[in-house]
Structure formats: structure tokens, C-alpha cells
Image (cartoon, rainbow, N blue to C red; front, side, top):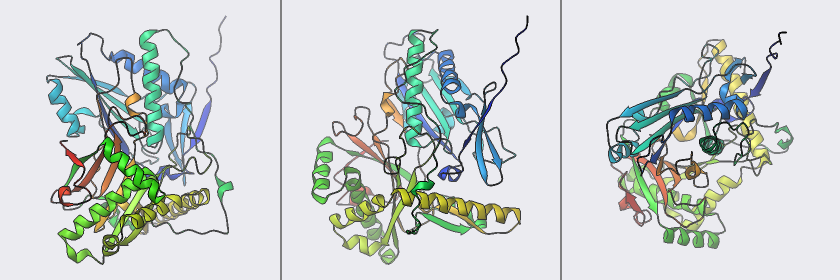
Length: 459
């Protein structure tokens, strides 16, 4: 007696109704795990691969799917009987722990992160992997470095770190019992971004200065970092400094993050004006990534990319003249405007622009391309994203928490990433906090009265 194989089923997950199409790039991280006892079987590669494949096939099927383009729509298509499993590669290097750690801190992605193909989603480029892993082992058996690349159209930072926490938890459980088929995951593995048309308020209209329309033939020129060499400095915000910032934030009626952003903006603005007084009448831009899930009534477990950028712009001389309280209010207003109806307006704006871009391409016309304003050139930019509440150091695969996790180096003038240190406890001020700052190499942060208070860490 023969039994027919179960019929294949197809499921589609749309990424056309959020900002995902704007993020057709890969984002990379490096996680360092120290093997203090030099024990054998540390991060067994077969266990890594088995746990990852189990996770995506059982809980995160879109990560084992394919992008499909149809007109102006982009879907992730996945099937019940075939999988685009994330590629996992390994290498063994003849170097010690200190040397490999230095490569991580120097963001040597060529050595330690898997090489990703073009992330541009096109009909002729269907086999884009959603997630790639490279495990680096040392001949000394002192450590393992996990280098990961994920496609930003499928996940934002919130979703990615929940995915990583779930992968590490599943791996840890398989490490203890290899025949498990059911797992206890710390985060519900949900995909999708729901319809948000109910958030539309036709009585309200919004400008969206966080986006910039540039000539299509100039788009890639605008995206280049520029002629100046951009270097990265890490500022350390001590426990005492965090407490002082929180007290000041309460006094001004803003959040801790808004307070810190205001300090960074005013400090950078003052430095750039000091170096070049001729920019006084030019633009000083603050922009930030905002997770609108809570204020839009969207579950935090949804794994699409709903994060949007908001911005505020004044002249350099205006920011120099304003006191810190006034700047915190500008920052607060920029973030607070991200309501449900603003979220819908932003997505609708992006969707309409995408239609126009596709029309121009079909008709061989050179039109406008939409870009995030923070990658366009401005005399002063302060572009902030905060990852301090993500479960970054909770990624224990059964061999202990990571010693250090390296965020991606962003080679754009004014990009700043608020990042937890290993002992930082998801937003509480019981450990130092880091801010990774990208600026031209001639900009000396120690010359800013506001920023000189923070310790510059060797990176």
C-alpha cells in the first residue's frame, strides 16, 4: 500500500504595505562567544545548522521562503514542502582570542560575516537568502564568532533580535535534548504586518521631511558616504551619567532617549559650527528611527519592518542658540508625531512614490527616487537609532551569553547608534551604555563641552 505525499501548500506574506521595500539591503552583526574552559563541542556546527533550520521551518517559514515581485507588489512566498534554508558556513582561523576580538571591534565583516548577494528585490533576482550565518572557530579553541546577515525587508531590529533570542533558546534546548520536537521560545514567532487602513484620518495631512526625492540618475551618488573619511567613535555613558540624564529628562518632561538625543544633536551641531562658521545658515538635521507598534496598536511580535524615520530640521545657528530644554522639545515633537494616522500617511506616501518609480522605469523616464533623508548630504546631521532595550545579550545558545556583540558600522556622517553593553539590563541604568558615532575623522568629540563628559572608548 502506498500513501500519497501531502499536497504542497503555498502561503504569501506581503511586504508591500509597509516600509520594507525601502530597506532592500542586508544588515550584519557579529557575536563573540568565549570558550573559557576550551571545552570540546563548543558551538557544534551541526547543532547550529539543525537548530536554525528547525526554527525557520517550524516557526519562521518566511525566512525559508522566496521574494516574488508582481507589478508594484512584493510578496514572500513559502511552501509546505520546500525550503530556502538559510546558508550556514564555517571557517577555522589560526589566531587567538584577542586578535579575533580586535577584528570584531574593527568591524572586519569581510573576514567574519557571510558575504551576501545584492539585496535588491527584482523578478530576475528571486533566490535572495533571507538570513545567512558564518561561524568562525579558532584553532586555539578560545572562542567562536557568529557573523550574521539578514535581509532588512523581512525584519527590523526589534524583530531580528527576537528571532535571534528564539534561535538561541531553541539551540540551547536541542543541546540538552537532541530529539526534542516542541520548544519553549521566549518570544511568539509571528510574521506579518496587519492592515492599517483603519488608522487613516482623511481630515489630516502630513508632510514627510524624513524622506527626500532625488533625481534617479543621482540616487546612488547621494547614497555614497562622501569624500570625507568617516570614522567611528564609541562614547560610554556611565551609570552616574545615565542617572543625571534621567533626572534632567524628568525635569524637561521627556524620555531618557530623547534627552540623550538632544545632547548628541546640540553637541555635534556646536562642533561642526566651530569647525566651519560658514554653515551657520545651513541645515542642521535630527532624524531617528521610531518603532510605532505600540502607538499604532500593532503587536510588538509582528516581524515586518514597520519602523519609520521621523525628522526635525533647523538652521545650524538656531540649534546653537537654543538651550538644551528647547532642543529636547524639538526631539520630543519629532518622535511624538508618529501617531497611527501619521504611520498610515507615511506608508501611503511611500506606496504612491513606489508606483511612480515603477511607472518611470517602465516608460524609460528619469524621474525621482525616494531616499531616507539621513543618507543625503547635509552640513550637520544627527541620525539616531536606539537598540538599548533589545535582548542582544540574552542570546545564549547553550554555551553562555556573548562576551561582545558588534553592531554594523554605518559609514554615514552623523549616524549614531545607542547600544547596550554586556551587563546592561534592557533599559535600566545599572551598567554603562555605549553610543557608536560616525563622523569625519577631523571632528574631535572631546572639543564639545557637552560630549567631552563622556568617555571615548577604544574601538
